[in-house]
Image 1 (cartoon, rainbow, N blue to C red):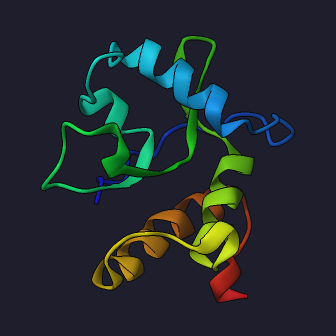
Image 2: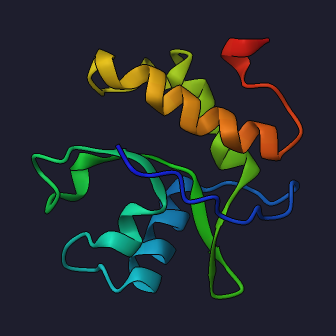
Length: 119
């Protein structure tokens, strides 16, 4: 699980393209060859037992905007959907689900909304 970073929010109407955001975050973080702390900050969860594998990082919610890492509202909503079962759900340990939802709920609150599981 990553610590809540309280990233600034990107514009609400910013499109979300997770694959493109992943490429930009890797480049921005200097993590083209292996993950690092800056790369980790763009995700909500990672497998602490396998921190050197990109596949250990889940629920990307951030992108690089104007050379800064920002949480993208549509990325937060996509991650929220995954936590509700969209796209096959999240492949994370069940004991981490409440903390992941809490992390995402803080970004929903920052956007002035309730998380989908709190509606």
